[in-house]
Length: 417
Image (cartoon, rainbow, N blue to C red; front, side):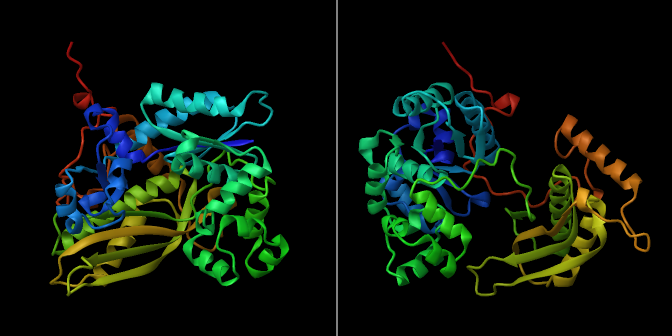
């Protein structure tokens, strides 16, 4: 048996933890640069506040309903997520952190009533972190995701849904559209609809071999999992990223090239730091810049750059990223976003050196290790590339940002008695 524990409206709930006066009130959280709505409390959803809508478009609607608006405070959300995951580790020795707000628990071999155990998990996370969660329990990961959907959306489950018998999950499968099944997106859902498969129940009743012929082995496994056969084990060690992107929107839109060069240098350095953390090198990078898509003079451009050799050197990656900006920059525009992507990665343990080609020196390896050690000890940005500049002239717009309650000393909550 597996349990999937999912934080309810995670970002909005994080904002309510240190603001109990906002519980049971509509709350929304905005993306970087206060661009669009990315999280809504259940009360905001009940008001019909749309998701992923530009803030400036729905601001009158939010004000009319007195919705509390927050800028994305991702350091706070990351720290709350860590606390939730640390609490969940006490309920199973084998876990998989699936996302910032979801964790799978392996309950195999636990000889105890699972419905009360799910309620115990839910109550413990509320007592210890004040985070509301839903718990889905089932014999496969896909069914556990479905059970969590039921726990969150069907009031009778009280936030915990146990699918331990075929009759239980078959009933729920009939209530849920196929596109709500884990791994079945809208495009795949359209293809299934063309075959007469609209509900999760119809997908579960389809022939797995026929589904494999029409699609692939992953969809075949989904069908098997919907019928209670576990085909996917826990991934206890997170998989390495196949690509690494670092992008940001600008609070003040730069019109000159120099701020773009500094920004791209910073993003390249941050991406390289993540690259070194997973012990990979990069061969190819992508750089892009664009203006606001809401303006009639919209301009967007990107380029792909082949590096001279496999590297994790922040200096080399940033230098080529800056050259790319010079190639795609056009004067006369106010740019809203830029980014650097490391798109062709290779593990260090699979690297094959060539005596006839350049390669990264041991001196560079030592320098990068020293750079990372300084930033781990004294905080990110303690040591940085000079090409990124000392002061950012493009700070993000975070007009409604809450305090960093758990990660900054002067933002610690104060209790008066």
